[in-house]
Length: 237
Ligand code: GLP
Image (cartoon, rainbow, N blue to C red; front, side):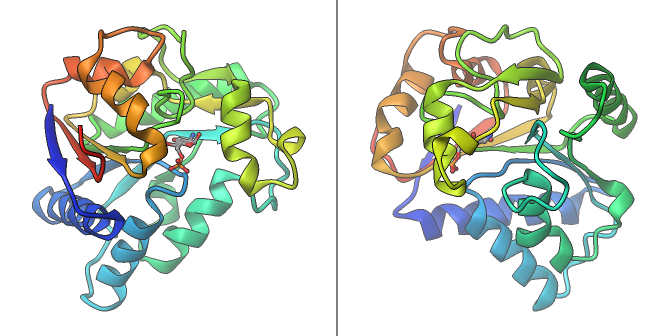
């Protein structure tokens, strides 16, 4: 793993934006894997700016989001569909049919997972998978204890995750209990992975992720086994 220590959130976001922009400018039909959460917000702002100010086009780009809550109404502003549209997609020229986000409103969720995997297979490998890190070590919504061999699947969210994400909802009780997420096996198939970790509250978990044993109890620790992982972080390890 290549760990790059940055001064602050801004520098992390600038370097992340450069990696994403290099990827979409160097590859003919780039495929990006994208996260939600507070961490990538500035990265998305910078990508929007690259489009609006520097005329960078996203017309040839395909994207796959990591996850989505189950059961939020279509117009819910807490859904990851809403988040991605607001922060990125509606400001750039990416064709809607190249944007993929799991459908948390599907009546048959198992079938939805299979459908999502099908889209991923047809797109070929993800060229750059961007990840954030949950305070419990999750990536996507793969909670501690999830098998490393899972592909896109349905998960039950841990209490600590509901607590961490409650700030986007009226209360912790309003955070959905289930989500659809790309599995660890799916995530590890990406050619390159970029993990963004910012802020003191993630220092302990990041140390375990990079220095501890590889264990399903700390899902992100599996990244130690991937051959091309970059971590951008303001945490001193
Ligand atoms: C959510 C998402 C993850 C994200 C994590 C960290 O649970 N499912 O993909 O990485 O939160 O979020 P934040 O960046 O807000 O700390």
